[in-house]
Length: 83
Image (cartoon, rainbow, N blue to C red; front, side):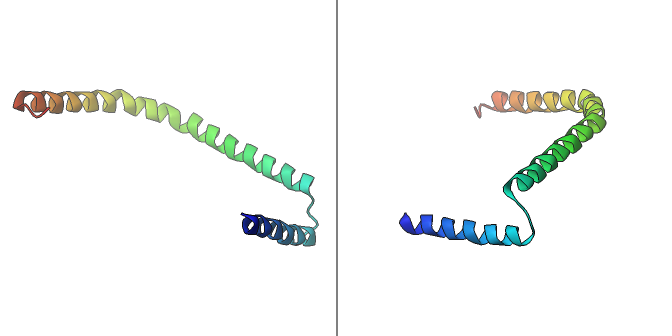
């Protein structure tokens, strides 16, 4: 347990030295992470806005076919007594 804590502290130190070499501070790093997170969320929402209508259109055809397929398999198993 103590060894793991020492490893984490040393890793934090090494990463801190590397980030300091790139003139990065903690606040700047947090701003960069949050802005990139917001961009990823925006891309996901943009994709869902673009693709959502196609998914719904396809679901109008695919879901009834899948439901019928499941029902047919269920009735076949029930008729053969495999439940």
